[in-house]
Length: 147
Image 1 (cartoon, rainbow, N blue to C red):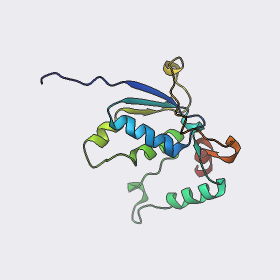
Image 2 (cartoon, one colour):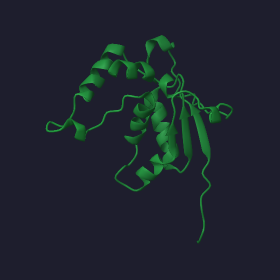
Image 3 (tube, rainbow, N blue to C red):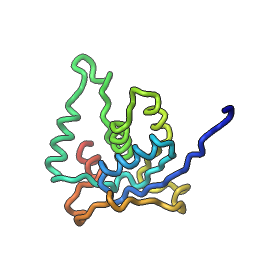
Image 4 (cartoon, rainbow, N blue to C red):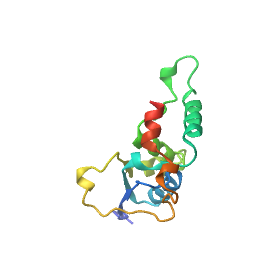
């Protein structure tokens, strides 16, 4: 079939108060199936666990660097939008062509850009944090802790 193209739907997701790992798995499924996904309020997504254990595990991960030249990588994201983007990337098959093509359909923003402020935002009920938000650490707080 010549000129056949699939029509991709655009989904705007509000990440405020959602557990980041569960959210990223839903987003990965959406982008790999061909949908364009825009995630807003990335800094308000939450990570489960105590703040000290989260900080400790991330600091251990940040210590991984090249012995000869640390400028050659690996590069560790420190912004909330990049942290979530890296989490989604880890759930995609990046060694196959559909993985990088899926990443092109994903946009993650801190806050809500003006162009998406009036768009209908999607939330997932099974991804929302059930306890009060004081029990969780937000991705924005994590970004401040790790610098």
